[in-house]
Image (cartoon, rainbow, N blue to C red; front, side, top):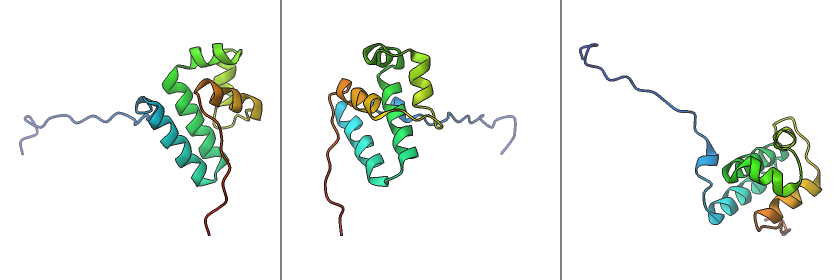
Length: 102
């Protein structure tokens, strides 16, 4: 193939927040993260869900600054249960406990 006629292919970093655009998808992403049993992965998922809804709006409803919300949901963040529960409430969700599969 002649290099002059080759098309340039570009890639965009995949951003899950772009695809969490319905309540059903929020639930699927969150349930999947909980099944991983990995607190860091769960935190990244909650971050993606919050970004999908708009960090400014979520921060306002939580009563925190946008910067503070980003900080608490960052990979090295450590949000309180209170923050996570409030965030889930804003999204119209709640956590559910069930026995582990054998």
